[in-house]
Each structure stands twice: as structure tokens, then as C-alpha cells.
Image (cartoon, rainbow, N blue to C red):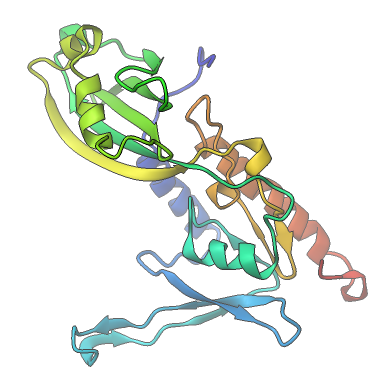
Length: 264
């Protein structure tokens, strides 16, 4: 949990900046374009991806903005869908990628960004908690980051709850709100203003739940692989590193003479 000397940044802004750097060297990005199907060669290896048609009316007829989906072919397709992606689940089954790993488990992470009183703001402060208000049979915990963004005192706060909870009346959102009533937490947000919020699923299975990562014509990276560091509630750095390692390995392989290539 050691964070001294690290930087607290907005992941959304970082991703936007990284996209700009990629485009500046010729990488093609397709924002708001989802992959809808996996394409295969006759031998069963991955050929690429297909995207959905867009601009379709509710009755199924094409609108004036209609555009046909694309087929994107590649020598190697890298799947980075995040947690529980629909294409990744197809790959697990088709290539039996989970045969040597334990079942993946999941959590729900809820997050809010607050603008708080400057007198209560401590730029760079990071707080993690575990347990309360959950019972002894439910795992979860919180995170809190104090960020100064363009002289705006912001606090990023969130709570993660394992989705294997047994109490049918447990409401993750309500537990998050109850967490903020703790005296040590409540005082930070008094007279503050919530400016954004969101939620997402998280891989919680740990190292033993990581599937086989490669298959003929492709590989998995990031949360498609379950690389989230569960105790630290951190996964962006492991996702980025897995992408870097995959890119280096694929480039090394494709740089060899064609006769040395062998799909595995």
C-alpha cells in the first residue's frame, strides 16, 4: 500500500493524452466504435474483429447516418476489453483458457468525485480502509485520493464490494453512502459538492484466477486477463505494463522471417 512519491492523476485525462500521442505517430483510433464479433481463419486462429453497423433506427431500418460495420484484420489481435468482456468470454470457452486457473470472482466499484472545502483538503493524501460498514461475511474496502486540479480541491472517493455477498438485501450503493457517514469521512464532505460519479465491475480473483493469455492469432491483456491488484485496488499500471510486454513480444515475433512464425 506504499504510495509515497507517486503522482495522483485523472485516468480519463491520461488516456486522452495517450490517445493523442498514439495518433501523432500514425496509430488509428476508432472512438465510440465497439467490436461486435471475432473473425476466424479457416484453421480456427484469430483473423481480426468485426464492428457493429451504426445509424440504425429502432425498427431496424437504416437512418441517414447509417454506416456499415468494418472488418479489421491483423496478424495478432490483442484483446483489452476490461472486466468480463463479451468477446473475451468467447475466447475463454473456444480455447479453453481457464482450464488451469481458479474461477474468476468479481466486485463492484463505486466512485464519486467531490469538490470540498479547501480547509479540509490535503493534496496528495491517500486513504484506504477495509471492512466497515460491511459484515464479517462480506469483503470490501474504500479508497480516497485528495487531488488539486487547476486549483480546484477535489476528493476522489470510492468503495468496492465483492459480488459474492450472501445477504439478498445488501445494496452496494447504499453501503457506499453509509460508509460516508463515518465521522472521519463525513467531516471531509460536509458543505462539499459531488460533481461526478460512476461504477464498474472489477476482477477480484487474484493471481490464481489468471487464464492462459495467448492463443492462435491473439492474446489477452489488462482486466481481460484479471491483472487487477486486488489488495491495492489498482490495475491501470498492470494493464499498461501487460500491453507493453505484449507489444514487445509480438513485434519480436513478427520481425522474424515468415518461415519461423508458428501459431501457438
